[in-house]
Amino acid sequence: MSQDATFEDGRERPLNLGALDADDLSVISSLAQDAVFPITEMKWAIRQRRFAILLNRFRWEDDAARPERVQALLSFDTVLEVASQGIDRSDKDTVLSLLSVTFEPTQDGAGYILLTLAGDGVIRLSVEAIEATLKDVTRPYVAPSKSKPRHPD
Image (cartoon, rainbow, N blue to C red):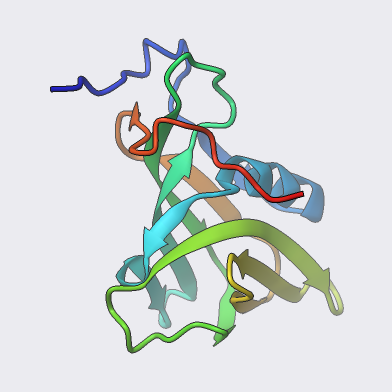
């Protein structure tokens, strides 16, 4: 039986980051790259104007001997609209893989946050402004693949 990793093993504290501009968002994007999540773990709270995903994030910031993942909450506030392309939302068994989080400005700080997924899927959030957080919510665990995610060249 394998034993889960601990934050102490990685000498890291749980992440709790905020983003208020495109530069901040690029940091969150790099730390959330290759996160995986079931399609059922996306929620849009329309009245609160919040979109959130509970994802299994690869711990890129920790160069541990054992590759680790951790569950993290990626959330966005001031969300006016959510749209998706290339995702079958009716298939509740779908597992998605996050490649990047980017921002396309429109006017006065508003714009679109694009969550680009593996397999040509994308989730587009229309926002009044960038207000994002990435927060680890569990202890790290050994990545089931026991290896770092790889991308074809």
